[in-house]
Image (tube, rainbow, N blue to C red; front, top):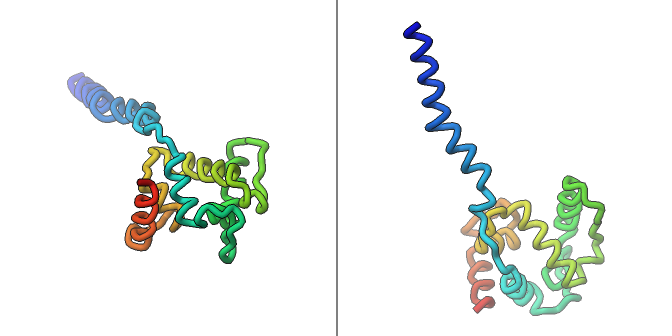
Length: 146
């Protein structure tokens, strides 16, 4: 009987001290994310990427935010996974409004904590970008935001 009491005590202790706080933290993860006004960030990226030119072209990157075909495909994959019947086309990269929508969509998936630094770095180097390779870009965008 003592052994059963000990086991029950251990299980209850585990639930109270380990599992419940973890579940509570996970369920309130939306509280950890902060609301960000992305407009200044997007405006700075537009300035750095194309000097505000919505018709800018540099290799596969086009539009004011210099969006690649891969990013358009990723946005469409995100929409499909969320069962949203919307689709972006390559020509949408020339629309500043649609480019901003794609930026916000990418942030919603890959930057749930709304880190401005992560948003800027990933826009330049991809979602798995290194800090070293994106440092100059980060500095340029932050200067453009001032």
